[in-house]
Length: 260
Image 1 (cartoon, rainbow, N blue to C red):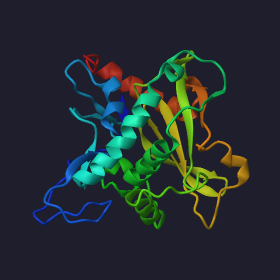
Image 2: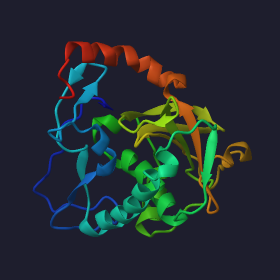
Image 3: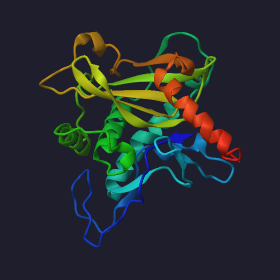
Image 4: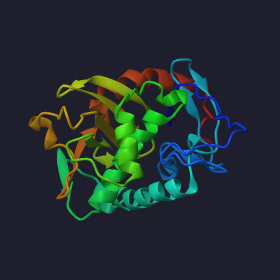
């Protein structure tokens, strides 16, 4: 299932487009996914369609590809694909998808640089996107810092723009068939944060800068070169899931053939 605000179809212009990442003028931009395509696969139906649901308007649309926008040149698109391929292999390993009941677990054998660049790229993508699904994300000057980091492949410190990763579980099993729009959270450690759900995980991005680092109390929760910390939480214990559940049930009751 995919929950979002109403999203218009991205439009192209007759002007020579500019890559949003490297700022180079190119003949053609890629129709880039904001959330990588492989995260949508679990929510496609048998006809390779998915149904974005606007809970604000109780409205259903039908699309055949994950949400995309003309953002990147081929070179930058390929760069992001390299990060995504690494994360794809980590995210859907048996260690993550098997049934678990501990409060958290740690992965040590992973490519820190590519996983970290992936996290930064997601935060940058939802910040730069003009799609209304991501309209609540306001990064201001942080957007340019992220762009430079990604364009030059120069990593920010682990405690700058950190991400807290929580696996969504139902009776211990990993639930991956759910994507939700970003939501701005109340302040975490003196910084604004955004919560985004995809791939069976809650990705909580804390927008902390070099000049205003996050308190060390929260630092231990972030990805580090030595390890990837993943928290486990039952969906029934996630308040924001419980808040949208009644509206979603109403939609399913009114559209019994939605997933066929």
